[in-house]
Length: 274
Image 1 (tube, rainbow, N blue to C red):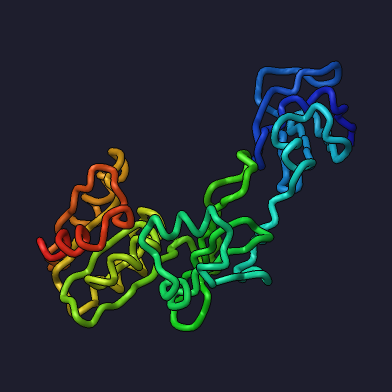
Image 2 (cartoon, rainbow, N blue to C red):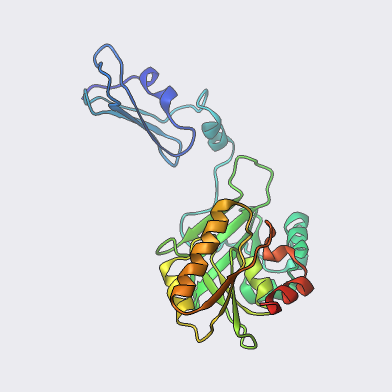
C-alpha cells in the first residue's frame, strides 16, 4: 500500500473530530472525484485513505501548525469521560461551591436543599456543574455546564447510557398539571407548583412521550424557552402529539425566557393561570 505524504492530506484535516472527502491530486493519483477521506480522531490524530489509488497516510506527531483544535489538545485535554459516572470530587454543598457556579445557581432560584434532593453537584476537576438524570435509582446520564476560562471547551456536555432520549419526571402530588420544560433547573423550579417533565433539550422522545401519555393527568403546559422558530416549532409538535392522545395541552409563550429565570411568584401565577 502506497504511503500518502503528510503534505497531501494534513491541511485538509477538519478542526474538530470528524471526516472530510476531497480530491487526491498527486503525481501518482489524479482525477476529479473526491477519492481522499481525511479523518481527525478524538485524540487529535489524523488519518487519510484514498479510495482511488489505495494510498494511506497518518499523522500523530507534533501539534505545530495544525490549527485551533490541535492547539486546544496540546493545551488542555477535555477531562469529562464518555462513560456515565459522576466525578470523584463531586460536591453537592451549595455554600462551599466556587463563586461563579454558586452565584449562577442562586440567581436561578436554586437553594441548598435542591442540590441535595436532586444530587446536583460541582466538580473542580471538570470545572462544571453536573445535572444528573436518574430513572429509579440508576444514573441514566447527566448534563454538565462549564464554568472555566477556556473558551474553546463546550459550554454543555451531555452523557447518556442507552440512547439519546434523556429525560426525567419530577412528581408533585398536590397538582393536576404537568409542565414540560427543557432543563433540569427549570424542572426543579416548576416542580414546586406542578408536576414537571424535563426534556434535557427540546426533543420529546418516545419513552418520554409514552410516560407522559400514560399519566392520569390531562392538563399539560409546554413551557420551553421560546427563543427561536425551531424551539417554537418543537413546542407546537409536542402540543400536537399530546392533543392527539386526548391531553389538554397548551403552549406558554415566554418570549425567550427560561422558566428558571422567573421568580417563584411569577412561575406560580403562570402555572395557576392554566
